[in-house]
Length: 102
Image (cartoon, rainbow, N blue to C red):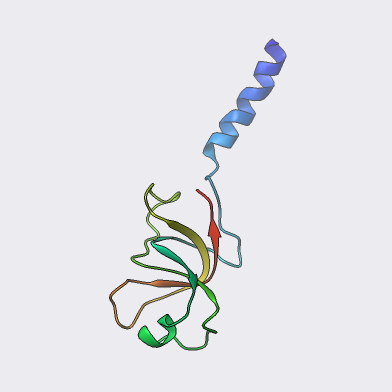
């Protein structure tokens, strides 16, 4: 039992230092937002061009200040790009995103 405890302690310590989730290299921008879904009409509302409206996006007062996201933030995402919304109402928009658990 003593040997097992000695072996498990370093593994537990290493696991404790890892973030709850990490973004892949292709989508390195971590965002905490209020909605996740297709880019849709944000392409016209925010003046975003060059993306298909079906592109997965994260929007709604996004912040990258927390990893993991604070409880109560409905959408955690990893995004390829972060683009400001020209309308400026909702803050930045994450595009080409994957939703992640936290």
